[in-house]
Image (cartoon, rainbow, N blue to C red; front, side):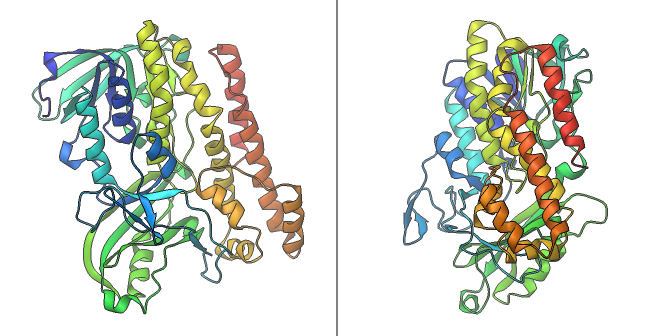
Length: 478
Protein backbone atom coordinates (compact mmCIF):
# COMPACT_ATOMS: atom_id res chain seq x y z
CA UNK A 1 0.00 0.00 0.00
CA UNK A 2 1.26 3.49 -0.85
CA UNK A 3 0.93 6.05 1.92
CA UNK A 4 -0.55 9.11 0.24
CA UNK A 5 -1.30 10.99 3.47
CA UNK A 6 2.04 12.01 5.02
CA UNK A 7 0.30 14.67 7.10
CA UNK A 8 -0.89 11.82 9.32
CA UNK A 9 2.65 11.74 10.71
CA UNK A 10 5.20 14.49 10.15
CA UNK A 11 7.94 13.41 12.56
CA UNK A 12 10.41 10.65 11.79
CA UNK A 13 13.84 9.81 13.08
CA UNK A 14 15.20 9.79 9.50
CA UNK A 15 13.78 11.39 6.35
CA UNK A 16 15.26 10.34 3.00
CA UNK A 17 14.68 12.18 -0.26
CA UNK A 18 14.92 9.84 -3.21
CA UNK A 19 13.81 6.23 -3.75
CA UNK A 20 16.75 4.99 -5.75
CA UNK A 21 18.94 2.05 -4.67
CA UNK A 22 20.80 4.11 -2.04
CA UNK A 23 17.74 5.74 -0.49
CA UNK A 24 15.68 2.55 -0.34
CA UNK A 25 18.48 0.35 0.97
CA UNK A 26 19.41 2.88 3.66
CA UNK A 27 15.76 3.16 4.70
CA UNK A 28 15.42 -0.62 4.85
CA UNK A 29 18.54 -1.10 7.00
CA UNK A 30 17.42 1.59 9.45
CA UNK A 31 13.84 0.38 9.66
CA UNK A 32 14.80 -3.19 10.56
CA UNK A 33 16.66 -1.69 13.53
CA UNK A 34 13.46 -0.09 14.78
CA UNK A 35 14.09 3.44 13.49
CA UNK A 36 11.14 5.30 11.96
CA UNK A 37 12.00 6.28 8.38
CA UNK A 38 10.18 8.21 5.66
CA UNK A 39 11.22 8.06 2.02
CA UNK A 40 10.00 10.95 -0.11
CA UNK A 41 9.97 10.35 -3.85
CA UNK A 42 8.65 12.68 -6.54
CA UNK A 43 7.91 9.93 -9.04
CA UNK A 44 5.35 7.15 -9.19
CA UNK A 45 6.21 3.82 -7.64
CA UNK A 46 5.70 2.06 -10.98
CA UNK A 47 8.22 4.39 -12.64
CA UNK A 48 11.13 3.50 -10.33
CA UNK A 49 14.20 2.01 -11.98
CA UNK A 50 15.54 2.40 -15.50
CA UNK A 51 13.94 0.21 -18.15
CA UNK A 52 17.05 -1.87 -18.75
CA UNK A 53 19.60 -4.08 -17.00
CA UNK A 54 22.82 -2.61 -15.60
CA UNK A 55 26.14 -4.05 -14.55
CA UNK A 56 26.13 -4.07 -10.73
CA UNK A 57 28.96 -5.26 -8.48
CA UNK A 58 28.23 -8.74 -7.17
CA UNK A 59 29.76 -7.98 -3.77
CA UNK A 60 27.43 -5.01 -3.27
CA UNK A 61 24.35 -7.05 -4.13
CA UNK A 62 25.38 -9.84 -1.78
CA UNK A 63 26.08 -7.36 1.04
CA UNK A 64 22.63 -5.87 0.48
CA UNK A 65 21.06 -9.28 1.02
CA UNK A 66 20.38 -10.41 -2.54
CA UNK A 67 20.91 -14.05 -3.41
CA UNK A 68 23.35 -14.41 -6.30
CA UNK A 69 22.66 -17.13 -8.85
CA UNK A 70 24.74 -20.23 -9.43
CA UNK A 71 26.87 -20.80 -12.54
CA UNK A 72 25.87 -23.66 -14.81
CA UNK A 73 27.78 -24.33 -18.04
CA UNK A 74 29.22 -20.83 -18.03
CA UNK A 75 25.90 -19.03 -17.54
CA UNK A 76 23.88 -17.91 -14.55
CA UNK A 77 20.98 -20.14 -13.57
CA UNK A 78 18.41 -20.48 -10.81
CA UNK A 79 15.26 -18.89 -9.50
CA UNK A 80 16.63 -15.32 -9.55
CA UNK A 81 17.62 -15.46 -13.24
CA UNK A 82 15.52 -14.01 -16.05
CA UNK A 83 14.23 -16.32 -18.77
CA UNK A 84 13.40 -13.45 -21.09
CA UNK A 85 13.64 -9.67 -21.25
CA UNK A 86 10.04 -9.36 -20.04
CA UNK A 87 10.00 -11.53 -16.92
CA UNK A 88 10.35 -10.13 -13.40
CA UNK A 89 13.44 -11.99 -12.20
CA UNK A 90 16.51 -10.04 -11.13
CA UNK A 91 19.56 -11.17 -13.12
CA UNK A 92 20.32 -11.70 -16.79
CA UNK A 93 21.68 -15.20 -17.56
CA UNK A 94 24.77 -14.16 -19.50
CA UNK A 95 27.97 -14.37 -17.48
CA UNK A 96 30.86 -12.18 -18.59
CA UNK A 97 34.09 -13.82 -17.48
CA UNK A 98 36.41 -12.60 -18.75
CA UNK A 99 35.24 -9.40 -20.43
CA UNK A 100 36.75 -8.79 -23.84
CA UNK A 101 38.29 -5.33 -24.19
CA UNK A 102 38.70 -3.89 -27.67
CA UNK A 103 40.80 -0.88 -28.55
CA UNK A 104 39.10 2.37 -29.60
CA UNK A 105 40.15 1.91 -33.24
CA UNK A 106 39.14 -1.79 -33.12
CA UNK A 107 42.63 -2.86 -34.19
CA UNK A 108 43.28 -5.17 -31.22
CA UNK A 109 41.91 -6.76 -28.08
CA UNK A 110 43.53 -6.92 -24.65
CA UNK A 111 45.15 -10.29 -24.11
CA UNK A 112 43.16 -12.47 -21.72
CA UNK A 113 40.32 -9.99 -21.29
CA UNK A 114 39.62 -8.51 -17.87
CA UNK A 115 38.07 -9.76 -14.67
CA UNK A 116 34.44 -8.60 -14.50
CA UNK A 117 33.10 -8.44 -10.94
CA UNK A 118 29.62 -7.38 -12.01
CA UNK A 119 26.37 -9.16 -12.78
CA UNK A 120 23.80 -7.71 -15.17
CA UNK A 121 20.84 -6.72 -13.01
CA UNK A 122 17.34 -5.65 -14.03
CA UNK A 123 16.89 -2.14 -12.65
CA UNK A 124 13.08 -2.27 -12.62
CA UNK A 125 13.08 -5.53 -10.68
CA UNK A 126 15.77 -4.28 -8.30
CA UNK A 127 13.70 -1.19 -7.52
CA UNK A 128 10.58 -3.25 -6.98
CA UNK A 129 12.35 -5.69 -4.64
CA UNK A 130 13.83 -2.86 -2.59
CA UNK A 131 10.44 -1.17 -2.29
CA UNK A 132 8.83 -4.42 -1.16
CA UNK A 133 11.50 -5.04 1.47
CA UNK A 134 11.41 -1.47 2.72
CA UNK A 135 7.64 -1.49 3.03
CA UNK A 136 7.70 -4.84 4.84
CA UNK A 137 10.24 -3.39 7.29
CA UNK A 138 7.90 -0.50 8.12
CA UNK A 139 9.36 2.29 5.99
CA UNK A 140 6.83 5.03 5.20
CA UNK A 141 6.98 5.49 1.42
CA UNK A 142 5.55 8.74 0.07
CA UNK A 143 5.44 8.70 -3.71
CA UNK A 144 4.38 11.71 -5.79
CA UNK A 145 5.84 14.03 -3.14
CA UNK A 146 8.88 16.26 -3.54
CA UNK A 147 11.42 17.37 -0.95
CA UNK A 148 11.59 21.11 -1.57
CA UNK A 149 14.06 22.44 0.98
CA UNK A 150 15.92 21.59 4.14
CA UNK A 151 14.67 22.98 7.45
CA UNK A 152 16.74 24.40 10.28
CA UNK A 153 19.93 26.45 10.21
CA UNK A 154 20.98 25.79 6.62
CA UNK A 155 22.76 28.96 5.48
CA UNK A 156 25.90 28.85 7.61
CA UNK A 157 29.28 27.19 7.24
CA UNK A 158 29.72 23.44 7.59
CA UNK A 159 30.21 23.57 11.36
CA UNK A 160 27.15 25.83 11.85
CA UNK A 161 24.62 23.87 9.81
CA UNK A 162 21.82 22.28 11.86
CA UNK A 163 19.29 20.46 9.67
CA UNK A 164 16.02 19.61 11.42
CA UNK A 165 13.92 18.16 8.60
CA UNK A 166 12.58 18.87 5.15
CA UNK A 167 9.71 20.76 3.55
CA UNK A 168 7.62 18.56 1.27
CA UNK A 169 5.09 19.37 -1.42
CA UNK A 170 2.58 17.08 -3.06
CA UNK A 171 3.23 16.77 -6.80
CA UNK A 172 -0.49 17.10 -7.51
CA UNK A 173 -0.45 20.59 -6.00
CA UNK A 174 -2.59 19.65 -3.01
CA UNK A 175 -0.31 21.17 -0.39
CA UNK A 176 3.02 21.69 1.32
CA UNK A 177 4.01 20.55 4.81
CA UNK A 178 7.09 20.11 6.98
CA UNK A 179 8.60 16.79 8.07
CA UNK A 180 10.78 16.88 11.18
CA UNK A 181 13.68 14.42 11.40
CA UNK A 182 16.82 13.84 13.43
CA UNK A 183 18.68 13.10 10.19
CA UNK A 184 17.68 14.15 6.69
CA UNK A 185 19.35 12.32 3.80
CA UNK A 186 19.86 13.49 0.24
CA UNK A 187 19.53 10.51 -2.11
CA UNK A 188 18.28 12.55 -5.08
CA UNK A 189 20.97 11.42 -7.52
CA UNK A 190 23.09 13.63 -9.76
CA UNK A 191 20.93 16.68 -9.06
CA UNK A 192 21.80 16.50 -5.33
CA UNK A 193 18.99 18.98 -4.71
CA UNK A 194 19.24 19.09 -0.92
CA UNK A 195 23.02 18.92 -0.60
CA UNK A 196 23.54 21.71 -3.11
CA UNK A 197 21.13 23.98 -1.21
CA UNK A 198 23.64 24.30 1.67
CA UNK A 199 25.13 27.40 0.12
CA UNK A 200 27.48 28.33 2.96
CA UNK A 201 29.35 25.01 2.95
CA UNK A 202 31.46 24.70 -0.23
CA UNK A 203 33.04 21.46 0.98
CA UNK A 204 29.55 19.93 0.91
CA UNK A 205 27.52 21.74 -1.76
CA UNK A 206 29.70 21.34 -4.87
CA UNK A 207 27.75 20.88 -8.10
CA UNK A 208 28.71 18.07 -10.47
CA UNK A 209 29.68 19.51 -13.83
CA UNK A 210 32.08 19.34 -16.78
CA UNK A 211 34.14 16.16 -17.01
CA UNK A 212 32.23 14.74 -14.03
CA UNK A 213 29.27 14.03 -16.30
CA UNK A 214 28.81 11.65 -19.20
CA UNK A 215 25.93 10.90 -21.52
CA UNK A 216 24.99 7.25 -22.04
CA UNK A 217 22.28 5.38 -23.88
CA UNK A 218 21.42 1.83 -24.88
CA UNK A 219 19.04 -0.09 -27.07
CA UNK A 220 17.97 -3.62 -26.12
CA UNK A 221 17.04 -5.25 -29.41
CA UNK A 222 15.46 -8.46 -30.59
CA UNK A 223 17.91 -10.87 -32.23
CA UNK A 224 17.31 -13.19 -35.14
CA UNK A 225 18.85 -16.40 -33.72
CA UNK A 226 19.19 -17.90 -37.18
CA UNK A 227 21.54 -15.12 -38.25
CA UNK A 228 23.28 -14.65 -34.89
CA UNK A 229 26.02 -17.21 -35.54
CA UNK A 230 27.27 -15.14 -38.48
CA UNK A 231 27.55 -11.90 -36.48
CA UNK A 232 30.10 -10.61 -33.98
CA UNK A 233 27.95 -10.62 -30.83
CA UNK A 234 30.68 -11.20 -28.26
CA UNK A 235 30.16 -9.44 -24.91
CA UNK A 236 32.77 -6.70 -24.95
CA UNK A 237 33.71 -3.12 -24.10
CA UNK A 238 35.24 -0.90 -26.74
CA UNK A 239 37.12 0.95 -24.03
CA UNK A 240 38.38 4.52 -24.48
CA UNK A 241 36.33 5.18 -27.61
CA UNK A 242 35.25 8.83 -28.01
CA UNK A 243 36.22 9.59 -24.39
CA UNK A 244 33.99 6.82 -23.15
CA UNK A 245 33.20 3.23 -24.05
CA UNK A 246 30.72 1.15 -26.02
CA UNK A 247 29.49 -2.39 -25.52
CA UNK A 248 27.41 -5.32 -26.62
CA UNK A 249 25.88 -7.62 -23.98
CA UNK A 250 23.94 -10.59 -25.27
CA UNK A 251 21.35 -11.18 -22.56
CA UNK A 252 19.45 -14.08 -24.14
CA UNK A 253 19.47 -16.12 -27.33
CA UNK A 254 17.01 -13.66 -28.85
CA UNK A 255 18.03 -10.32 -27.30
CA UNK A 256 21.09 -8.10 -27.05
CA UNK A 257 21.96 -4.82 -25.30
CA UNK A 258 23.97 -2.40 -27.45
CA UNK A 259 25.05 0.82 -25.77
CA UNK A 260 27.70 3.32 -24.84
CA UNK A 261 28.54 6.53 -23.09
CA UNK A 262 30.82 9.49 -23.72
CA UNK A 263 32.07 12.45 -21.75
CA UNK A 264 29.52 15.26 -21.63
CA UNK A 265 31.17 18.22 -23.36
CA UNK A 266 30.59 20.59 -26.28
CA UNK A 267 31.10 18.89 -29.62
CA UNK A 268 30.91 15.33 -28.26
CA UNK A 269 29.71 12.55 -30.50
CA UNK A 270 26.15 11.37 -30.02
CA UNK A 271 26.52 7.84 -28.63
CA UNK A 272 23.24 6.93 -30.32
CA UNK A 273 24.96 7.39 -33.69
CA UNK A 274 27.76 4.96 -32.75
CA UNK A 275 25.20 2.50 -31.40
CA UNK A 276 23.21 2.70 -34.65
CA UNK A 277 26.39 1.99 -36.60
CA UNK A 278 27.14 -1.03 -34.40
CA UNK A 279 23.63 -2.37 -34.97
CA UNK A 280 23.72 -1.79 -38.73
CA UNK A 281 26.95 -3.81 -38.95
CA UNK A 282 25.23 -6.84 -37.38
CA UNK A 283 22.39 -8.15 -39.60
CA UNK A 284 21.08 -10.44 -36.85
CA UNK A 285 20.04 -7.43 -34.73
CA UNK A 286 16.52 -6.50 -35.75
CA UNK A 287 14.73 -3.17 -35.63
CA UNK A 288 12.52 -4.35 -32.76
CA UNK A 289 13.36 -2.35 -29.63
CA UNK A 290 12.52 -4.22 -26.43
CA UNK A 291 13.84 -1.84 -23.77
CA UNK A 292 16.32 0.98 -23.48
CA UNK A 293 16.86 4.68 -22.95
CA UNK A 294 19.54 7.03 -21.76
CA UNK A 295 20.54 10.19 -19.97
CA UNK A 296 23.23 11.87 -17.93
CA UNK A 297 25.59 9.68 -15.94
CA UNK A 298 27.85 10.73 -13.09
CA UNK A 299 31.54 9.90 -13.50
CA UNK A 300 32.85 12.41 -10.95
CA UNK A 301 34.11 12.46 -7.39
CA UNK A 302 32.47 13.02 -4.05
CA UNK A 303 32.35 16.47 -2.44
CA UNK A 304 34.87 16.70 0.40
CA UNK A 305 32.18 16.14 3.05
CA UNK A 306 28.99 14.11 2.91
CA UNK A 307 27.61 15.17 6.29
CA UNK A 308 26.64 18.09 8.48
CA UNK A 309 24.68 18.15 11.73
CA UNK A 310 21.38 16.39 11.02
CA UNK A 311 22.29 15.73 7.37
CA UNK A 312 23.93 13.15 5.13
CA UNK A 313 24.15 12.34 1.42
CA UNK A 314 24.34 8.88 -0.18
CA UNK A 315 24.53 7.36 -3.65
CA UNK A 316 24.99 9.56 -6.71
CA UNK A 317 24.18 12.60 -4.56
CA UNK A 318 27.36 11.71 -2.65
CA UNK A 319 29.42 10.93 -5.76
CA UNK A 320 29.59 7.23 -4.87
CA UNK A 321 30.00 6.01 -8.45
CA UNK A 322 32.84 4.26 -10.28
CA UNK A 323 34.29 7.09 -12.40
CA UNK A 324 35.88 4.84 -15.02
CA UNK A 325 32.58 3.17 -15.99
CA UNK A 326 29.76 5.31 -14.58
CA UNK A 327 28.42 2.23 -12.75
CA UNK A 328 26.68 3.74 -9.73
CA UNK A 329 24.29 1.15 -8.29
CA UNK A 330 26.95 -0.84 -6.46
CA UNK A 331 28.61 2.29 -5.10
CA UNK A 332 25.22 3.65 -4.03
CA UNK A 333 24.37 0.49 -2.13
CA UNK A 334 27.83 0.33 -0.58
CA UNK A 335 27.51 3.95 0.55
CA UNK A 336 24.07 3.25 2.01
CA UNK A 337 25.33 0.23 3.92
CA UNK A 338 28.30 2.17 5.32
CA UNK A 339 26.06 5.05 6.39
CA UNK A 340 23.30 2.91 7.90
CA UNK A 341 25.13 1.75 11.02
CA UNK A 342 26.54 5.19 11.73
CA UNK A 343 23.20 6.95 11.35
CA UNK A 344 21.50 4.27 13.43
CA UNK A 345 23.99 4.71 16.28
CA UNK A 346 23.70 8.51 16.15
CA UNK A 347 19.90 8.43 16.22
CA UNK A 348 19.75 5.95 19.08
CA UNK A 349 22.21 8.06 21.11
CA UNK A 350 20.17 11.17 20.45
CA UNK A 351 23.25 12.91 19.02
CA UNK A 352 23.09 13.62 15.28
CA UNK A 353 25.71 16.36 15.28
CA UNK A 354 28.40 16.58 12.63
CA UNK A 355 30.74 14.99 15.15
CA UNK A 356 28.46 11.97 15.51
CA UNK A 357 27.90 11.61 11.75
CA UNK A 358 31.53 12.27 10.76
CA UNK A 359 32.36 8.52 10.56
CA UNK A 360 30.21 8.45 7.39
CA UNK A 361 32.92 10.62 5.87
CA UNK A 362 35.82 8.72 7.33
CA UNK A 363 34.78 5.21 6.33
CA UNK A 364 33.97 6.35 2.79
CA UNK A 365 36.92 8.61 2.00
CA UNK A 366 39.59 6.52 3.67
CA UNK A 367 38.21 3.38 2.02
CA UNK A 368 36.44 3.01 -1.30
CA UNK A 369 36.23 6.75 -1.84
CA UNK A 370 40.03 6.95 -2.01
CA UNK A 371 40.03 4.57 -4.99
CA UNK A 372 37.28 6.49 -6.75
CA UNK A 373 39.00 9.85 -6.20
CA UNK A 374 42.30 8.59 -7.62
CA UNK A 375 40.55 7.03 -10.61
CA UNK A 376 38.77 10.35 -11.28
CA UNK A 377 42.11 12.06 -11.75
CA UNK A 378 43.55 9.28 -13.90
CA UNK A 379 40.40 9.18 -16.04
CA UNK A 380 40.41 12.91 -16.67
CA UNK A 381 44.07 12.93 -17.65
CA UNK A 382 43.83 9.89 -19.93
CA UNK A 383 40.67 11.06 -21.66
CA UNK A 384 42.88 13.57 -23.47
CA UNK A 385 44.54 10.68 -25.32
CA UNK A 386 43.56 9.94 -28.91
CA UNK A 387 42.12 6.69 -30.24
CA UNK A 388 45.50 5.92 -31.78
CA UNK A 389 47.37 6.52 -28.52
CA UNK A 390 45.07 4.31 -26.43
CA UNK A 391 45.18 1.60 -29.09
CA UNK A 392 48.99 1.74 -29.06
CA UNK A 393 49.00 1.29 -25.29
CA UNK A 394 46.74 -1.75 -25.60
CA UNK A 395 48.77 -3.31 -28.43
CA UNK A 396 51.98 -2.94 -26.43
CA UNK A 397 50.44 -4.38 -23.27
CA UNK A 398 50.88 -1.15 -21.33
CA UNK A 399 47.13 -1.00 -20.84
CA UNK A 400 46.72 -4.67 -20.00
CA UNK A 401 44.54 -7.20 -18.21
CA UNK A 402 45.76 -6.18 -14.74
CA UNK A 403 45.49 -2.42 -15.11
CA UNK A 404 42.14 -2.50 -16.90
CA UNK A 405 40.66 -5.09 -14.51
CA UNK A 406 41.43 -2.72 -11.65
CA UNK A 407 40.10 0.40 -13.36
CA UNK A 408 36.88 -1.19 -14.63
CA UNK A 409 36.16 -2.63 -11.19
CA UNK A 410 36.72 0.69 -9.40
CA UNK A 411 40.10 -0.10 -7.84
CA UNK A 412 43.13 2.18 -8.09
CA UNK A 413 46.15 -0.08 -8.54
CA UNK A 414 49.08 1.73 -10.22
CA UNK A 415 51.86 -0.30 -11.83
CA UNK A 416 54.80 -1.36 -9.69
CA UNK A 417 58.41 -0.70 -10.54
CA UNK A 418 58.82 -3.88 -12.57
CA UNK A 419 55.71 -3.23 -14.64
CA UNK A 420 56.76 0.38 -15.20
CA UNK A 421 60.13 -0.79 -16.53
CA UNK A 422 58.46 -3.27 -18.87
CA UNK A 423 56.13 -0.51 -20.09
CA UNK A 424 59.11 1.75 -20.72
CA UNK A 425 60.67 -0.92 -22.89
CA UNK A 426 57.46 -1.66 -24.78
CA UNK A 427 56.73 2.00 -25.40
CA UNK A 428 60.27 3.21 -26.04
CA UNK A 429 59.24 4.74 -29.38
CA UNK A 430 56.60 6.93 -27.70
CA UNK A 431 58.33 8.62 -24.75
CA UNK A 432 55.87 11.52 -24.67
CA UNK A 433 52.94 9.15 -24.35
CA UNK A 434 54.66 7.23 -21.56
CA UNK A 435 55.23 10.50 -19.70
CA UNK A 436 51.49 11.22 -19.87
CA UNK A 437 50.73 7.81 -18.39
CA UNK A 438 53.36 8.23 -15.69
CA UNK A 439 52.01 11.67 -14.75
CA UNK A 440 48.47 10.31 -14.45
CA UNK A 441 49.59 7.44 -12.23
CA UNK A 442 51.74 9.69 -10.02
CA UNK A 443 48.94 12.16 -9.46
CA UNK A 444 46.46 9.35 -8.85
CA UNK A 445 48.81 7.86 -6.27
CA UNK A 446 49.18 11.20 -4.47
CA UNK A 447 45.40 11.64 -4.33
CA UNK A 448 44.93 8.06 -3.15
CA UNK A 449 47.45 8.47 -0.33
CA UNK A 450 45.96 11.82 0.69
CA UNK A 451 42.44 10.41 0.90
CA UNK A 452 43.75 7.64 3.12
CA UNK A 453 44.69 10.39 5.63
CA UNK A 454 41.11 11.74 5.81
CA UNK A 455 40.47 13.06 9.37
CA UNK A 456 39.02 10.25 11.47
CA UNK A 457 37.03 12.65 13.66
CA UNK A 458 35.43 16.06 13.28
CA UNK A 459 38.20 18.64 13.70
CA UNK A 460 37.40 21.83 11.75
CA UNK A 461 41.02 22.96 11.43
CA UNK A 462 42.28 19.52 10.40
CA UNK A 463 39.48 19.15 7.87
CA UNK A 464 40.16 22.55 6.31
CA UNK A 465 43.83 21.63 5.88
CA UNK A 466 42.90 18.29 4.35
CA UNK A 467 40.36 19.84 1.96
CA UNK A 468 42.79 22.57 0.85
CA UNK A 469 45.41 19.99 -0.06
CA UNK A 470 42.84 17.82 -1.86
CA UNK A 471 41.64 20.82 -3.83
CA UNK A 472 45.18 21.68 -4.94
CA UNK A 473 45.80 18.10 -6.06
CA UNK A 474 42.70 18.11 -8.26
CA UNK A 475 43.64 21.49 -9.71
CA UNK A 476 46.67 19.76 -11.18
CA UNK A 477 44.45 17.52 -13.28
CA UNK A 478 43.66 20.39 -15.66
